[in-house]
Length: 391
Image (cartoon, rainbow, N blue to C red; front, side, top):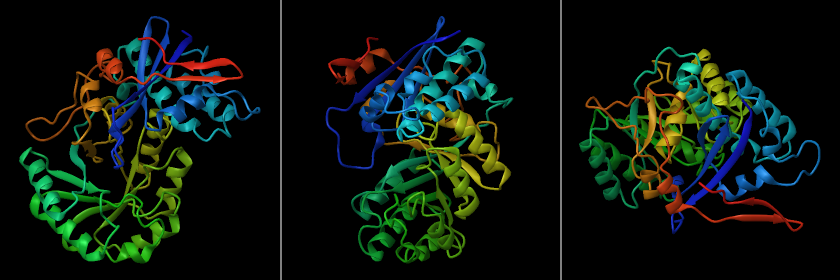
């Protein structure tokens, strides 16, 4: 079975807002081989990743991603790893390659799972997928009162855990941040699991981050996520020695195995958060999950888009029983809501379960793709390199 086509579909809301919400656009990947097709999703700026798929070769280590994928044999999970390694070798200097590969890798796993009539987690070696506790992932309100109301709402909806991030947090005074965290805790209740995401707002400033530790400790926050950018390992490590009961979390900015490995080894984090749509797909994410598990760091998925991406993000650690938290976006835009008729919804116990179906167990709706599809054409030297494919 050879890979015959790779189609990228750029979807977008009619208006993109300047907020930390990744569900406003999407880049879907469809791969066809033999009589099968698989779907994936890249967590990246769609147009940039499309360009990296089709760009003219610059030199031997800067080739378009599609050149390493089209025509390749796909018969086993080993072939998926081989294709990924080929992309990295041939597109070494194409810095968007890992983001682009991520969606391709997910689609390859989905296709192979359908061919072999097995869920992806089985192909990864897990005999079963354990349920996860979804934490309602949402942005801070513009005011503490709005944050309080958001926390109350998710608790009424049955969520035992929630995470607030971005918005005004870290951009004003310490008192303003303290008010936000207290509001979140009060709205969620004393027994709820609360996490805070700083969205890299302090870059590498340990002093600024440490000023918020007292309120996080007082409000029994489980983790402080991304106080710094992913590469600021020394800052992470120093803050981890000061944070006490509050663990540090990070890793969504890691776009290969080695970046995640270094965070696990040197950043002092308690939780590693990996996005399959960025880190190189399910293949790389499973490697990271295994390494984290072996080194006492809890693996958590990162996703803030569609349920297609949610399914992909859960597969790499589906069989790890103790790593039981999962990010679950509760404020997605209509694009993300409508994309998949099948949803991964909390059960009566407030837990979620992966579909027991071949591949990802979730398919995108073609009508929704057409509704949000962006028409794109890329030309160079008078030749069309990409044109929005037909469905």
